[in-house]
Length: 93
Image (cartoon, rainbow, N blue to C red):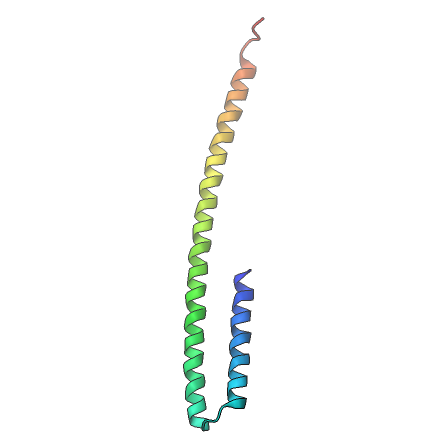
């Protein structure tokens, strides 16, 4: 699941929940607005936390990818050098 689809789902779910809450709430307008403000702040906080976690995970993956690339590059250079040296050696018969 991508971060973009996660955020879209959170926003859509939050909006749907608020709409249903407003339609069926037996509260006054002021109380309902206060509840909506609290719900919005909570949803924003959750989305922000998940975004930050996803960002940290992505940074970790990038670092791991860089390390893998560097290691693979070094192994390839060693293998290439060994192949060139082996080619240069006279054939033993």
